[in-house]
Image 1 (tube, rainbow, N blue to C red):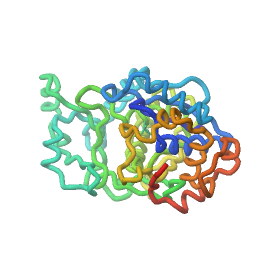
Image 2 (cartoon, helix red, strand yellow):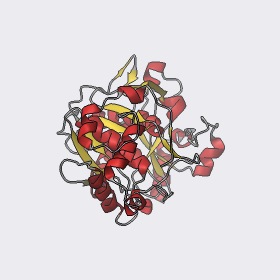
Image 3 (tube, rainbow, N blue to C red):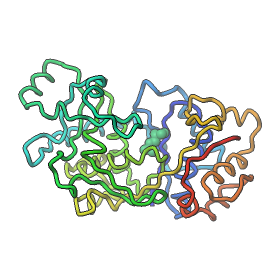
Image 4 (cartoon, rainbow, N blue to C red):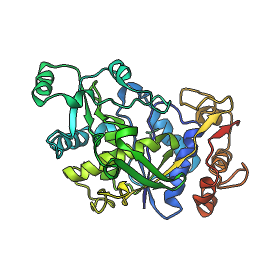
Amino acid sequence: MVGRLAPSPTGRMHVGNAYAALAAWLGARAEGGRVLLRIEDIDAPRVVKDADRWIMDDLAWLGLDWDGDPVYQSERLDRYEAALRGLREVTLDDGSPLVFPCFCSRADIRAASAPNEGDGFLLYPGTCRRLSEPVRRERVTRGDRHSWRIAVPGADAPESERMVGFVDRVFGEQRFDLTRQLGDVVVRRSDGLFAYQLAVTVDDLAMGVTQVVRGRDLLRSTAIQLWIRRWLRVAGVGGDGCDGVGCDGAAGGIGDAGVTDASVEFAHVPLVDAADGRRMAKRLNSLDLGTLRERGADPREVLGYCAWLLRVIDEPRPVGVDELVERFSWGPIAADRADRVVSF
Ligand code: GLU
C-alpha cells in the first residue's frame, strides 16, 4: 500500500488542506502503508516561493510524516516530456493520432460547446480533432499557438468503450462517459506547461502509488487520469521505468465495465467550506495554519478538528496521530459524505 500527499505550493495550508492530507495519510498508515510526498509545483505562475517549506513544516507540526525525500514535479519535466512523446506515437484504429495539437482558444471552445453540468467544465467540441494531418503539421510548423489533447472515444464508439469506472472508497461506484462527460483533455498547455492531468498520472504510476485520496471535486479528474493511465501503459511509458507496485500492467483494459485499473484505488473526500459558504481556497488566509499557529493553537486540537470532519472521532477534541491510526476506517465518512462547513 502506497499513499501520497500531493500539495500544490500555492500558499499556506488551511484547515481544508490539513483535513485532506490527514485523510490521505490515515488511508495509508492505517493499513501499514507508505506515504510519499510530492510537491506539485509545475504550474509555475501559481507557485508561491517557500510555500513548499511551509507545507512541510505544517505537516510535521501536525505529526503527518512521509517516507523518503519529497519529490518535486518541477524536477521531473523530462519524464512528462518522455510520456507525452510516447503517447504521441500512438495511432488509433481509425488512423488518427491519440494525441493531437489543438489551436482553439478558450473562447473558441466556449462558443462551440454546449454548457456542461454547470461546474465551469467545458466539454471540448472536438474542433481540431477533425483537422487533417497535413493541416496540423503546417500549423505546428508555422508556430501557431497550440495545446496538445488526448482523444477520447468518438461519439459512435459503443458504450462499453466510452465508459471509465472505479469504486471509490467514499463515494462508491463511479462511472463516467469519456465522450459525453469528459472530452479530449489537454495534456500539454498552450503556454508549454504540462497539464496537471498528465503530470499526476505519470507520477502516480511511476511512483507506484496504490491509493489516491483527495477532494471530491477531483472525481472527474480520476476518470480522466484512468484514461491517460491506460494509454501510458499501452505506450510503455510509465515515466520511471515503472518499477513500483502497480506497474504490472495487469489492468487498464476495456471490459464491460469500461476502462478501469485495479492497481490503484481512490477515495474522494467531501469538500470543506468556510462558514460563510465560500469554498476554502488557499488565498483565504482565514484559518490558515500560520494564523492558527501564531494564535497558539495546539496541533492536537487542529488534528482533532480535522479527524472529526473525517468522522474518525465523534466530536472535535485534541487527539494524536497514533489514536487516529487505530481508529481510522472509511466507513463513517462514506456514510456521511455531504460537504463540511467549518466554523473554527
Ligand atoms: N495538487 C493538488 C492539490 O493540491 C492535488 C492533486 C491530486 O491529489 O491529484 O489540490
